[in-house]
Image (tube, rainbow, N blue to C red; front, side):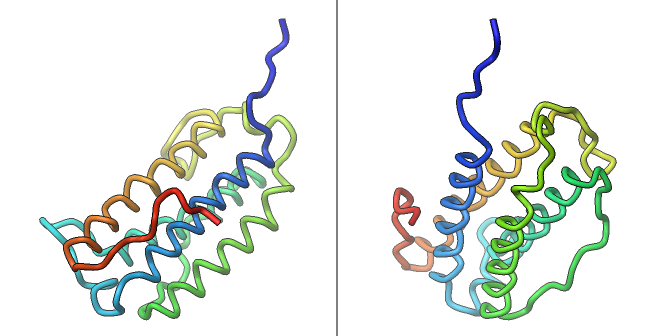
Length: 156
């Protein structure tokens, strides 16, 4: 019996970008200073988390597509406007790179960044879960700051 995919690559990309739009709205909800400095219980500020998401997205796609895993981090913005610009640039690059993922690559194993072995589809799941997990942290920060976070179900 042949396996049937339950989700296409295009559907997976659409879901990822829906989540990214929501995370962008969380970034927008923060006041500038708190975005880069506020934390609770020693956790990292939300800007640091957003930079982590940015630093994972495009480099991971580049590694998946080329089988060469980049190791040099890009410049880190220090303002909210710069962070949102970097977010939008990464979003556009994801859309550009996604269609170039080689057929069948999702089912292959690799060692991402020379450190994390596993199937490519599993690597995507990690990226998505990491963003959702830390976005929840951003929701807590916003609530502690007295700011209503964006509705998590609105992903347009």
